[in-house]
Image (tube, rainbow, N blue to C red; front, side, top):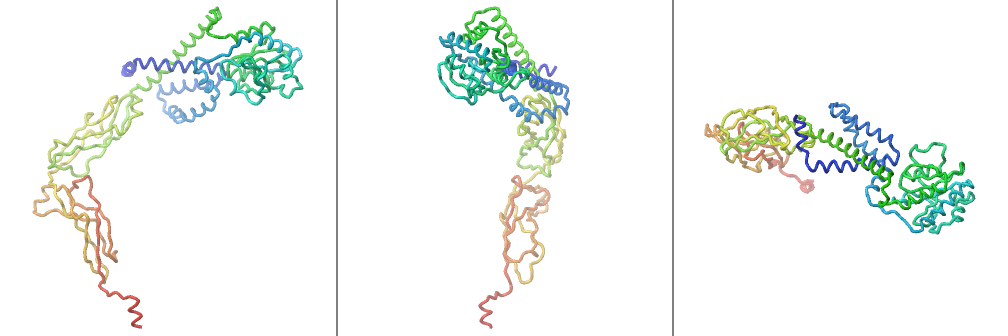
Length: 492
């Protein structure tokens, strides 16, 4: 019930927009994968995603660990594997694309059909590319720019077996022969059997990548075929070829709503519905996973608020506590530890030893998380009445100087340090003193400056958070007279 309640709380207008955008991505990926023929890889990825989802729902730690640690490598691998599909996906993301259409398309079509069937009768292999809406230049390599008006003799001469570029493709763009002897990308799918040669596989490769119309004449079979959107069909007659050209040239949104168009739009609506359905399932699985209530334990530092001025927290009070939290998995996994704080209020504390109980009110957490328990659930502390005074810092000198050396002065900086001194420390009328860390005179042969720490009597605490470091300046004097080189020379 808690999971269902959390799931219902996240349902709003943003959820609907999120599902629509996710459905659009699913639809575009589906269309791209379908046109590219990479179903085997896509199915493998889908199976992996299903296994991961099942492992997450059943909380299988080993499988979750493998998927979590391999995710970054898998994403990089998918980007490399699906680079052509991603490029196609981005190209198809724009719904409004320009198709070229000329008034001379009918004349060009007749010329092209006559050329194709003349080539088939002579059994001369040929590839003729007529671009569609997608840009074609990036898929072409090699070849020679022509920008010529196409004619039957020109096309026949280009595909003459004795012509240097007869194995390449001819590109007819905007009613003109723009390029010949062009190399096309080979198909990366298994749609064509191995019985077909390089010419057909190159035509299939281009038709899989973009929406160009590609005609192929087989020199072995003497047949004419066309390829479009990754599909190859044989043309039995000139009328069939004319029909294909007419549909390619005149394809726009103003086509009559024939039975074929109705069926086409029905399939389109079904694809949209299924894409939204899959997107809803994916969104639900992700949201259920993120809103799933989990429990985690965090180590949180303790912050003590200052006690009244006449009291001081003595000893080494606990510095941290373990907090048992409950909440959505997304909040627990992305929590910023700096947001977690355990605060112990000493503003109204009394002197003496006491036990403080801890609960959820002592812990500051994000609103989506709930405190279950704290470990330990209580703290033992002691507060003493203190007086804030300045104490003299005395050097702690141990050992003796070497013979011939005399200690002239010892200066400590800072000489006075503010401290909190318990009231009982003044019971005998003496004021406590602070000492430096030991200075061993046996190791000193000349005037020097040392750095040390402060050693305080029991119960005496620094007024600041910690004792400052001290500088100890030791000055020595030598009892033996100085003898220099000049005096030695005069004696000789």
